[in-house]
View 1 (cartoon, helix red, strand yellow):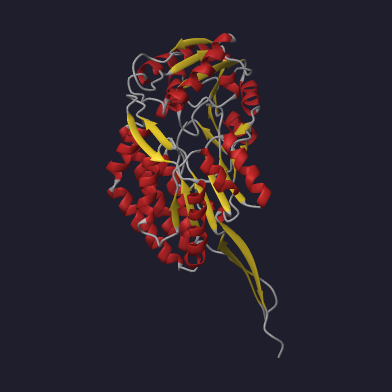
View 2: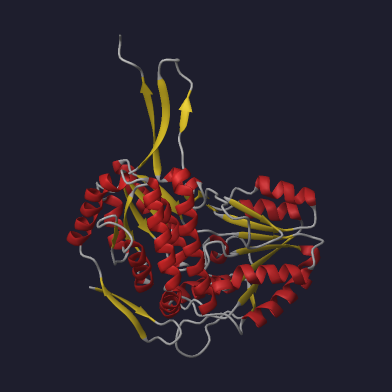
Length: 449
């Protein structure tokens, strides 16, 4: 059985790759297990040097990787190039952080030595998504490898050629067995999640897949690091410039055709500026229609259409967009939905497409309360001129990341933990090195004299 990927712009064939069969999957895990002891004992500086060489190779292959990404997922070329550059930079960051990742000395008796020492966990299965395949994979692969783990990597079935080529560039700098690459769909991911010789499963993808992985790992005591779905809220408070708020909302909802892990999925606007905000958001959507790429495939576009249809059937109004355009491919126009209510699927579930569903609320307190009432907990944005409202928002919202007056952005190295159905564990930053290691306490006393 093969993985088949069609160009989301034209519908033409791009990639056809055989799915790894169960026996070959098991053999890859066995090779990673066999290589684990030697790689764990490799000096940290040597592991870091391998990542640094890999980063240089990735930068040299940037055009190739970006073209593959564009053809498989529809990602705009500049965004694809930016993702490759970010991935190479992440590899360099972990190459620098790995050798200085440290344990602690403890204060015991004068005659003894007491230490807390981080050690690699063993074999890490890394399952990565299609919406930013190089940048996301670079973080998980880099952190796992530099801390001395071996890795079995399965890229998303929606961009297997992009994912495989990136991983190959890393594997070329590593000893045999340290990084194994598998091609496959969810069945291969499920096999890795249940494999006895896999010690950690790091997964970025849907909440449904994340829950299945968590169950499989819990049964055998393996660790998980999960970043799963989000239903990120954006709150527009009284007193902000409606046009600026519309620009921020459109960026959050329409960038990469709404297919970013922290895309804006729910919009709450205070009633006093709602009309001006909606007018400005429609104008923003009209402008984005000229520069938005396709969705990853027609299957995901159908999910978006189902959400929009459900909203309209239950009283929402499509002020712009709301139906696929004519022609080949998987294009969907930037859409603004007004009169949305919490019971609509577009508010309850992750739509993951270029849709901005808007709910008008009487005041900021109502917006904050309703934004917090959700089963996901990935991120949220608050646009407000009120310092007290901003302070209350970042404290009250039960999500891993809160952004005040900036829908995208943040300092390098930031690491958060998703909540609820959005996953668990640190997926970024220096803290990811802690996720990929396990602490051992050593108490060393002299023998009796």
